[in-house]
Image (cartoon, rainbow, N blue to C red; front, side, top):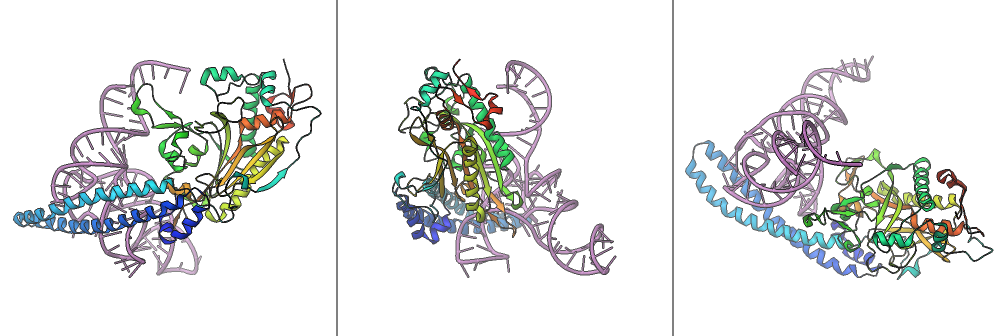
Length: 434
RNA sequence: GGAGAGAUGGCUGAGCGGUUUAAAGCGCACGCCUGGAAAGCGUGUGUACCUAAACAGUACCGGGGGUUCGAAUCCCUCUCUCUCCGCCA
């Protein structure tokens, strides 16, 4: 959520920043400003009435104590009307506040000044490459073919169980998935200093609002209902990412400055309706309704937010480096960035069987946008309460990593040579037919 | 699922319709005292809104609603915690 004070004081600046996203959100600023003004004028009216009422109520109390009931009664009737007016104004304030809040919650974050201004994903600058595209003496197979030949994924039975976009990992496929999760968690906890947490996989809607999925992207979420009790529908949602529960761990809290930076990593499955997304319903693992992911979250002081973003990206890159997978880092331009982000780097791993780069990590600094929504603050040294920067990054998403890994490591005979670092986790150096 | 008990400032804990502008203690900060410290004494110590700003005003005693001139206090409702019972991986 944007700071209403900033909108009030520098509306042109906010409009200009939002305009770089190219989604027309800058047009909503006038609406926010007029609701804000309405709210403040109502507030000053109702507050002076309340001050008046409080004063008279005290006088009534004093008169009662002095045994002067007649005078007290006179004052009561005087105040009754004030009370009615207060009730009415309070309702109006509430209404205006709700309206203002609703617009504010739908405004995206302002892109940081260092972000490339662009019109679409085509304008995303490539920041760097790591490694080279692997060369094959044969035409590399697609992960779909590899999975079927090696019995790693049973696509049709996955669809039988839950519909298209749901995967049934089988045998070595299931073991490889588990090995990867374990490897990622170990890497980030042992070498990068993150504290491992294992959150609930369903969250309240407040959490979805906190990290910015709601209200705007509610159509992408899976809502949970308890049995046939429809009144419970919409109370809990399947997490679209571990970012949601983990970033909300300290919602409504005031952290001590010494607690910062706080760094968490967590595994969770991620559930996404992918309503309207291209590629849903097609076979394979590139876009599915449920995938595994290890997520990294940092809560940091604003002044170190962008330094922390760089190390966050480096932590995610380490995954691919250790597995020996070729990748590139791109920066998302203003038009391509997510709703909550002020600056985002994507890491895309090379998938030889696809002949394309696949996004396996998205690392963002959301600045205080989410902290404000969840009212998470920290007490600075001078005693002031401030909103920290919240960063999130995939470290990394699993289904696509799985794809890149088996496509990159496939051998002439159709087997998969497991990277050395993963062998102790898989307890095998090779996945072959049979 | 059933029965009961609770939720009050950083913590403990009073208050159950009107100097409560939330007692008291602990903790914390500052000051006095001291060669220095402890003890002791004194002062202060929440969040947010509003305002150009304020030691001005308003709101906040788990959340929401109601009764009243006035609610931490009474009523309704929801959430959460604890104890016991049942069910259960």
